Each structure stands twice: as structure tokens, then as C-alpha cells.
Length: 297
Image (cartoon, rainbow, N blue to C red; front, side):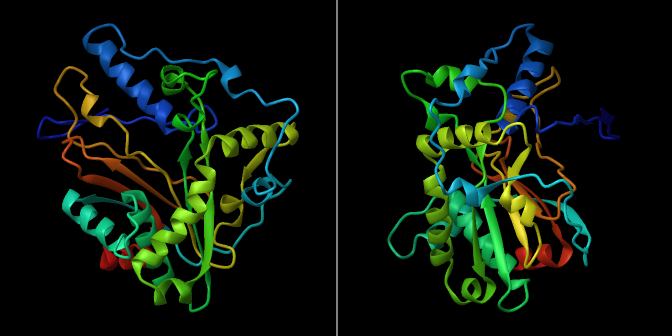
């Protein structure tokens, strides 16, 4: 807890991603705030691990072998030519709407996440060498995709743990820079949609079970900046910062700091606590990449 001269206060904490994802962290923070003001919590977490039990027999899709891998005994050390920098940006709802319109200019409406990811992918390519491969991954929260007769909407919303997948795309920088934003957003949509399904997520559970007792990781994170830049775009768009009231008023800013030690960039868009559609975006990238992003956005 840090108290500022103006009377405001900054509350921060750390999270181990092996225990919980961003959705779970949000549940904890909201419950903590509710306990301080009313002594009760509105959403009781579910620790029912059987919701994500592997199937028998298992049926992991072959595509998962491209997205995930067993962690090798030693990870390669890639020489780092630049140092990572963390910055927080404020994006107006109007700017996001304009970006989405550009990404949808060919007639197929793209989501704000697809538009934002496509724009970031192009900016990454602009900062890369000509012909260098650029990798972008988008985190998928599987809770809403797993709802069925066994997993109710309420229980999946309350599930505390990790329910994520990390699909990614890899394209030549020249191809990305020579095509419009709508084309880049289409490429994001194409690699994202197959992973946003119940079959994919249940297959991932089976895949992990098949590789026990070995530790596994997303291939994108292993590749990192080998043979071109990479970035992971997480999703905190449903973070309920406007519900964080510890007794001295609702929060005015919510963001994260995520220097995860991996040789890959990280970006986390979150909603502004104002609730007006604005975004607060944390970026952990090389400085020259951030300079390019600022010029693009």
C-alpha cells in the first residue's frame, strides 16, 4: 500500500499464474473489497477441479502439438539486443471504435480485440527487419465456451484456477506491412476462432494429461523472439475495476505490471473504471517497438 501526497492510495499485489488466471485474480480482488465494506462476498469461488477432468479416452487434436510443447530440461538463452520497457496507455472508446471500423472495412465486422491485435501485429512488423517472421498470440478464456449440461454458466463463472488457451499466428513482416489493417484482423480471427471452442479446450485438457508428469508450455512463449519478434495479448477486458471499493471510494485506475522474465512481449488491455468504454492498456515491449505502436495508434 502506497499513500500519495494528494491523499490517494495505490494498492498492489502479486499473482502466481500457476495458481490462477486473470479472471480468478479479479474474483479475489472484488471479494477482498466486498469483505472490507460488508463482510460478505457476492461470488463464492468454485474449486471443483472435476470440471476440467480429462476425458476417457482422451481426444487431443493434432493442432495442439503446434500450440503446446513439453518444457525442455534447459531453455535456450537468446541474446537480448534490447531491454524491455513497461508503459501504460489510455485509449478512448472513440479511438477503439475507429480502429474496429478500419478493421471491418471489407464488410466483415471484427471485434475490438481482433482489430487491436491486428494493429499491434502490424506495428510489430513495422519495427522488425524486412522479411522477419512476427508472432502474435491472443489469450482465450475458456469459461463461457465450456458451458454445457455438466458445467453450468454460474459454476464456470465462479471457477478459480486457469481456464486459458494461447493460440498464435506467425507471418512475414513484409506481408503484414504491405496489407491493410482489415487483412491483419482477418488473420487474427482465423487463428483465434479454432481455439475459442469447447472441443479445443477439452482437447487441451486431454493433451496436458497425456504429457504428465512433464511440465508443458505454450509454443509461442518458448519461441519468444527467436527468429523475429513476438508478443502475447492477454485479456483483462472484463476486469471489474469499478467494483473495487475498499471503503474510500471506487478505484480510478486499474492496471498490471507483468515483467514475466520470458523473451517475449506482453500486452494487457483492461477497461477503464469509469465504465465508459475507454481502455487502459499495459505494454511490456522493447522501446523501439513501443515507439512504433505509439505512431500507429
